[in-house]
Image 1 (cartoon, one colour):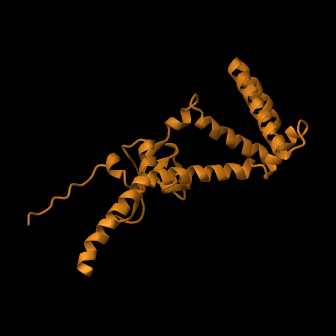
Image 2 (image 1 turned 90 degrees about the vertical axis):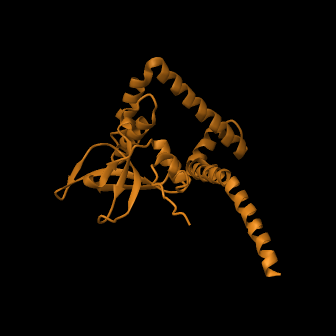
Image 3 (image 1 turned 90 degrees about the horizontal axis):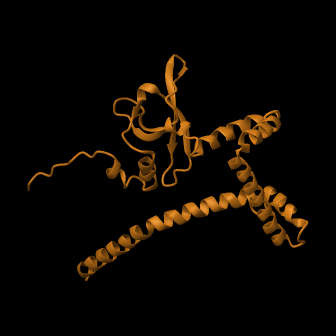
Length: 225
């Protein structure tokens, strides 16, 4: 009886796993969207500090909290639109000088603002000078038989620390590569990888499944039986 059931159980397991892998990309996408949505709600949600400020903007128009929150968002988006219009019309330098002059004079907040401005400039497609310096690298750790990992080299700059040169790399996490760690890795342990940033992200998101699409494989020859 057991021998008769085993093929059925194996076939059922095969079908079930096929269904799991078919829906897994959608599940991962939904999980990432939910995570980002939750993070945004924590920062600017109706119950957050910034959300309360946004609701106060619309509180002068409507006494209802939800309506005031919605109207506040409309006002905020309208202000952002007007700023974007002014920037596109040539007022970018003037606005930048005004904001920089006010914010960068504040202790601690000024340094945070300066770093944030630099990061936003890197993400701006119109100003991708810093992004062009980023590349995918392969880092090794330990002895000759040590482990290795794919990482994103922030820049070709080298930093002498304790008599040895180091470079800064970002190591994503799988399957959600938006997190990760920033490491100082010895220069002699960093090797350029012939791969795009999209390829690196694909490998981490797929937990290594798509690696054969971007990395050269070693062909394993099977011995004839």
